[in-house]
Image 1 (cartoon, protein in one colour):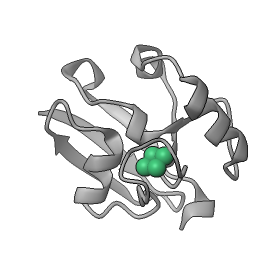
Image 2: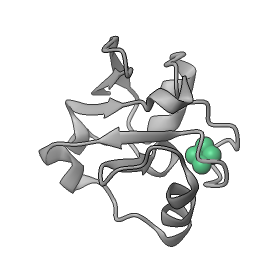
Image 3: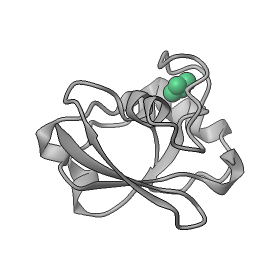
Image 4: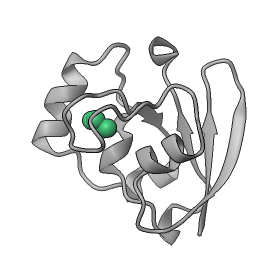
Length: 106
Ligand code: FES
């Protein structure tokens, strides 16, 4: 299990122990985190799992793939910290990761 903190745009914070191997999207949806819907089920085809990941742990994330980049270009409110939560697999390397959800998805 790895502790992940999800923070909504309004500051509401949830600390969730996530089973390693799950995606951040699956962890958010299973725990009813508002702002991450995961409409395509993690197929990298909808961008409803857009989130922001900052800080030193962001460097431990996998590179953004071409499909993820294309989807992010179409998502609302993207920044340099934008990722698709379905493309990030939780591992113990990400202990303490902070994931923010965009206002546009609330
Ligand atoms: Fe659809 Fe991530 S769940 S792109």
